[in-house]
Length: 606
Image (cartoon, rainbow, N blue to C red):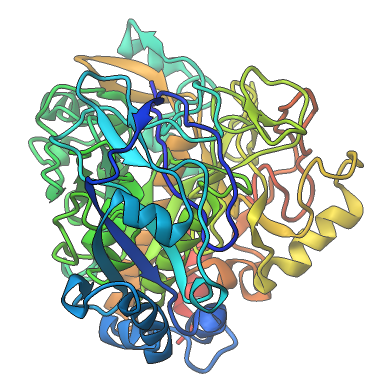
């Protein structure tokens, strides 16, 4: 169901060894006379001010609320300083002729092509040739770490000691510290259940079959676009997660006839093609829910992100397509990314995938911190990113990985420290947990956290708790959090999810038939649709899209905009996880949305 992803990264600063990644094995020492492109990704300026900049346009109390930055202003503010460029460039000039050293057009990456022997001397590293699981899948790198001089290391975020693959590879890579079952993949929730007789659902309640009408009733959501087609919303699908128009029509014939024969507008990233053979589950779920809720007056854009090379991280591909400057910032730039800032940006983007565990690890942390920063920079321009919180409770993914004392992740729900997941735990993303209608209950009653699978939630290890959620999270820690042993979870980390929406058992058309499906994969596009509808109202009123919404959601102005979920928990790692509680909690966040109240609260802002 999921696929495995590995980030091959050596350390900046002091040398340190990392494990040989799962799925790779050493063939031999690298030929000292062969050449590799060393890419130095330069430290950006003003990153310490990013949250301040965001609060200036996203805090409801700010007089600059909604005054989002232009992409040019973002680029200029965060570009590496002349001092940073000079420090790395001058150091390399001591070793190599100036014509060998290339500064990227965006002035955020320096590349020098050197022999393996030169790289080993320069970085005090040992390079090897590694083979992957597929025939012909070979690359050069160093898993043993490397060092940079102190005056250089503070100016370089990454050094990427890799070579291009000889041709496109079709698998995704395993992470250096991960059990082989760690996956990049979608959230799948509980096992799908085929629906043999769709007509019988007419007599079912929303506790046993969740349809579009159920969602409209649960979230007070009746929507007719009024912005005249100006509003934009998108959903991201990755690799071979695809849909079939015939499935959309099957769904629309039963639940949204005015959408018959309509399909999303394709935004192909790195040649992404929804017409290839692949898994129909995720894309069908996302698209049917969003097009079904929003209707024919609101176009849905589909970011179909291919992965033409196993060296590419799908997150990097999407971010680079939205922001050309990220092509230089990304450590894998030059590894095959061709779409650099040439794709349109929609106001809202829904992501129902996980890419990395949120653990402190030299092969993961620098990468995800750079990615999270980019989400924040894009949010500064007015984008809202919505992501699923995961289906593993306090463990990572449906493989239920927990962190052991030796720093490894082990699957199968063993006893261990809790593991958050990315991108949901990035503070610049709105993370969505999953709820269900209680057995025998109606849509007039507040839902509970799902029991068919544990909704993901917890605390980040890589990102500190932001100021805008301080009061809500501290209230939970002081009054409701279980007293687990020290080190079980990071109490000072960014807490998630932020909100919740229904995740089971939704009625979806897939593969020519109907199934009960769900997961936080469903919750994210549902909430993203509601944000898109809020944007539509604001744009029609002559106001900006909401952009980065988290500071507003946690503010007093939005206290009545959510249905507080107080029943349920998210077990994992041989614990009961966290219990739901009044106010914010790590299972359902602030609760499920009341669209009309949420819309009115946002319309009341400048």
